[in-house]
Amino acid sequence: MRIRAERDDLADVLGRAARAVSNRSPLPILQGVLCEVEGGRLRVTGTDGEITIRTSLQVEALEEGRTLVPAKLVAEAVRKLPAGAVAMSSAGGQVEITGNGPRFRLRELNVDDYPATAPKATSGGITMDGDLLTRALNQVGVAASGDDARPTLTGVLFEADEEGSRLVATDGYRLAVRDLAGAENFPTTLVPNRALKEVSRTIGDSKITVDLGEREATFGSERGSMTVRVIEGAFPPYRHFFGSFPNRLTVPREALLDAVGRASLVAEDHIPVRLNLHQGGVELSITRQEVGEETEHIEGDFQGEDMTIAFNVRYLTDGVAAVVGDDVVIHATDPVKPGLVTGTDEEGFRYLLMPVRV
Image 1: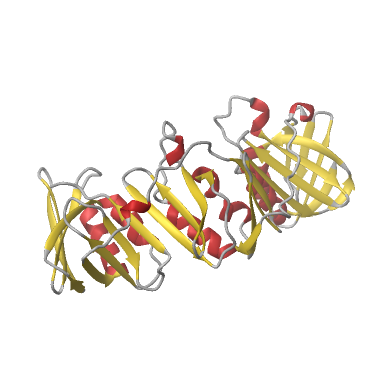
Image 2: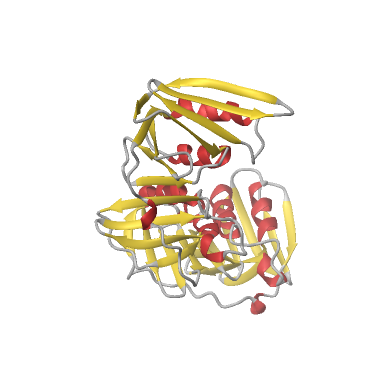
């Protein structure tokens, strides 16, 4: 194969496909990206066996063909060339990349050993607003677990809701729910959050098609596609957690984030921040015996009975940061029952977190 393309465009498609490649893969062949040139178009595929990302670019095709080249290395090599046109060709077991002076020669991997990764059509999927989807995935994704020993908690649940579709994630200590009112109903599917983090980075666009199957989920746009193996297993029941919350505090979102951020300077991850909810706002306090303490007051609107509840600093920060709008609402029942974080401008997002006993 032999092509010519603009450096930035070529670096973009190579870099996005390379995000599916894991440095920890036990199969050396999966350290490469597959580059295929046909009909004036370069198609680039990267996979780690579970996540597959496909991108493409219109190029000046001087010779059709295919090659397999180390993913991270080729993407960085193209990115570090001077701006302008870049030529890329494969011959004699090497891939040569040149552009305005510099020249890279990279060893070609055995393309015949690369696993078959035929693209899956998403014509039967659900097409929706790309910005809405990626924002919703970012909101709920903060609550997904990173513990591979509990695989069902490492995913985001896609399911139908009474008024549209819903995304749900939990790590056992907090739970995030994002309703997508009016969206076409999703079939119930559990998709790894590790892959969903890549949607906006790799194929994010104004329109994204979501095709959820029994074994694979595919997300596609004009920028490419990402296919991921879904998680088998039952997602924990969660709906019973959302009951009534008689106490309600409304405060400016940025003020609360800043205050919790200052409190975290004193805390370690296991030390909670106490929220003393009362008429006129909330007093935040945190104490670490060997370091000191931090206390401050934020004015706000509180409705209910005065109470004190404590939360993990990082979990609280994640929930407040995920809220869209100027104000955040903290709902509480008592110091030992879960608290709820919502916004005032967006009713579709709810973030439930367990309190810490103090």
